[in-house]
Length: 280
Length: 239
Image (tube, rainbow over all chains, first blue to last red; front, side, top):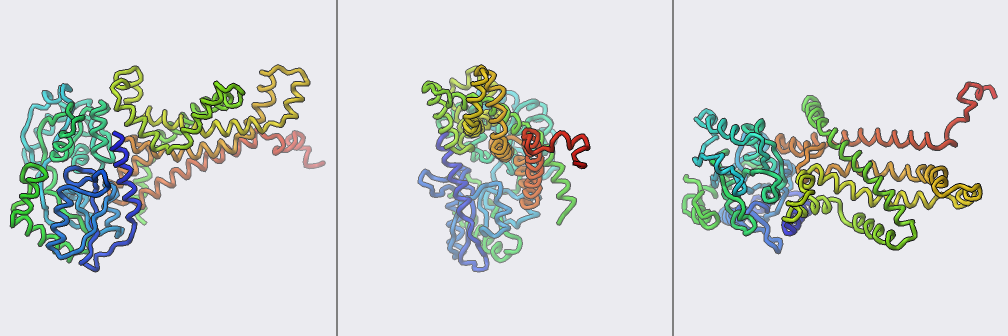
């Protein structure tokens, strides 16, 4: 708990101190922003250094682009405006491509794809209330997923649901469950998890890999994954300024390369236990 | 300048104003009661009362409000004993956690404002009141508190303004007041500058009204600032 506060403070401080202007003109030097609070994708170690799947991936992509990279931690909810303000050149932070985000930034081809899931306390009865365990693809709204959303709506009536602000999970809740549940919006997923354990919220929704990682912590033993999972975005991509088309091409080539030679497959298996790389 | 967007943002952010004002007014109101008690404890001359009060002020003035909010919201929620206690229905809600943190914080600052104001009452006036045979209660009611209130007002106006701005921190524990709504709108539209300017304008207008109210109260409480009664009846001009 104290650790989480310190972590949050460290992340926000890191945000404060990384105000230097970055420029992508010189493609050899790229400043990459990540959140540093979304384990195992990207997180901050106790000594302040960044680690995680995306940190390893970013380093490899940079190597293949022959670029010198600097990875900085940034607050999640200000990332896209800061990208356009030139504070860094790319975002590698488990960001899914959505129409809203595409209005303000350009996205590379996806490097991984993982669905969102619900987390609730054991014994809360939510596992029984949500007896569907399939993976639903909501990217194509015309598909038969309308039915499951209506069932969810009825099952979750009156519950309090916590999400991290400006995530695809948050958008899903906003779009489909708003009338059924009370939504609480958190700065980080860790805070939502804490409030789940404290009993302030009934369930939370986030990327399944992040929830699975959180469940490894001993104090999360009281929680469990419940209900169906949803694929909400076409995958996680590198976000770039719309004007940096050359940089986007470079990232795309590097992403295709790591997917083609199995590097990404091995890396996702190392960090998530499953292969969530993208097949070219 | 995208005026329709600014207007739309303004309408959305205004829905957060009641919560912001509710937090600010309640915390300053409850904090004032606590502050007077603390100030009287500090001035009581009894160590048993004065020291705990001084310690309280020291703790709450010397730690960041954000940390206090975190400790009350996330910190207390960690303890199983707290979660099963009679306080949990209150502490479970982010609103009450924010209100408690804001109240405890403003009480510490206000205690010093009140203490300073009480000490600034001229001893001559107190002696004169005693010489007239006033009891301690009458002395405080007629002389000390009215004078102290006047001295405290400018400082208290400051504190009220600070508290209105401090409510922005409540957004960190999921409360959707003006700043919380602004953060949400930014996450939806990614148009940080426009939204934050509108939010700032809302705080500015709220504080403009507060400064006017404090000015009016100062004027109303200071007889020497008002025209003499004769002027009010219309004869002052001919004299």
